[in-house]
Each structure stands twice: as structure tokens, then as C-alpha cells.
Amino acid sequence: MKCLIKVTLFSFLASFVLTTKYANASSLGEVNKTGLYLNEINVGSGYAWWSLKSYPNNLAVYPAFLRIGFNINSLACIDGSRSQLQLELEPFINSIADPNGGVETGVCVGLRYLHKLYGPLDSFTEASVAPMFLSIKTAEQGNAAFNFLDQLGVGLQYKVASRTAIFAGYSQSCLFRQYRTPFPVNFEH
Image 1: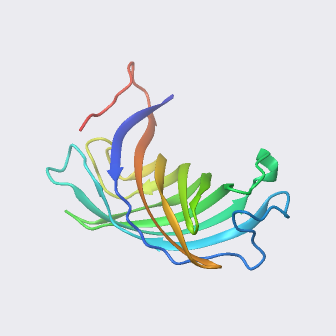
Image 2: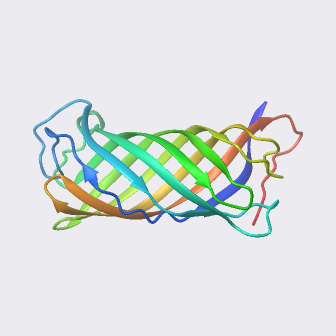
């Protein structure tokens, strides 16, 4: 069996999230900790839309997630003065509002790279993969089923206090499914 592209899910995630950082976390510029350690916990939401062949209109999606970030700078040989690399775990549940409603749920595992731009402003790039369940029937996927979701994203994070930040970003996702076929299937929008 091959893992083939089934459908590309475009989403714009404009979430403004209150970020509570772990009490002993190092921020960008602090380099005194080593190894893998918890340094960020986020709770967030936003808005996304999907464009699928089986639906004439975009699907409205309202995500809710918890992001748990572990600093891995020392493991990746990054000094941490202007950059930070995180291993992230992100359980999510996304409510699909229309046309018939449904849910997408799973846990993303990935990397998030933050780079200090100016003062309290940082940019970030992230990539993750998630085993997930999509509860709606689509032409691309078929019946409700478990799949894998790959996601890439970029954005900005603004630190409003020593342990609080807001961020906004854009992400693009691809939904994968395993099945037998003599050729790869790539659905264009």
C-alpha cells in the first residue's frame, strides 16, 4: 500500500492565542538550559476553510487546539540567542460547520522554529504530521475514516508580557490516505 495525496486542504488559521509559558522556561535570548524541556503551553482557536471537490462551497472549520512545546535547542546545536527550535505536540478538535457538520480530530507532532525579528516580535515556521479522524464523507476520502494530515505553516508571534504572547499565522494542509491504486492521485482545486 502506498500513501498518496488525496486532497489538499487550504486553511487560513488566524488565531490569536493567549500563550502561557512554563514557569521555568527560557525565552529567546536565554541559553542556560540544555536537553529537552517544556517551555510553552498554548490554547488556541481560529477559522479555517477547506475546498473539496464534493462540496460546491468551501467548508467552514473552527479549530480548537492545545499546543505543548518542548525546547530542543541544545539537541539541535542552536545557541538560542535569537532562535528557538521546539518539538511540539498539538491535540486538536476542529468543528466542521457546514454543510452537514462534522469533526476532524487528532494529534499533531512536529517542529516549530522561532526567530527573533525585533523587540517582542518573532517569526515562526512549523511543520507537523497528525494521525487524525475525519467524520464527514467526501469524494476525495470516501466514508468517514482515519487518515494522516501533513501541515506547514508560517506566522508572527508578539510577546505582550514575560509569559504571554499572541500569534497569527497561515497554514496549508494535505490529507493522506492509504489504499491500492496503480497510479498516484493528486486532486487539484
